[in-house]
Length: 150
Image 1 (spheres, rainbow, N blue to C red):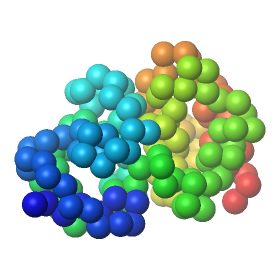
Image 2: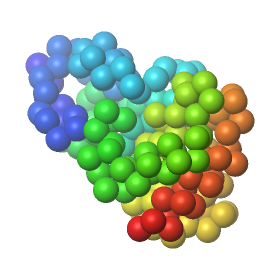
Image 3: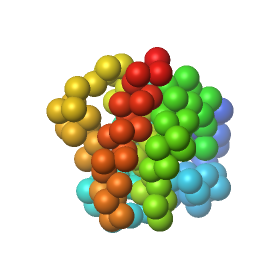
């Protein structure tokens, strides 16, 4: 039975090696904050952090995760950068429907962890997740606020 480290805890999962990480998280571990959007790694609703890198979990097979640490939205506020992002998301009132927001928060956390003071171009380049409600300006404002609060 494969072992997976999720949110700092080693977990045994009864899943085939080629099962997408998204479905392992949702169906096997009950972590439903990571959303299914498109299934082809385009929209970003399924974004998680794998060893700190924003990764579209719908396209990553379980076997590819190996010993990496997977962080989901359920634990992002335990990370200091993630906590700043979440606080800025609330302060800027970013979500409308909210469906894509867990993936957006994960991508923004990875951005600020790698680039603590990103430029507008760096924000635009890193934030490729799709938001059907069009909250892109609020997302960028929240990222700027979180960067300034460091």
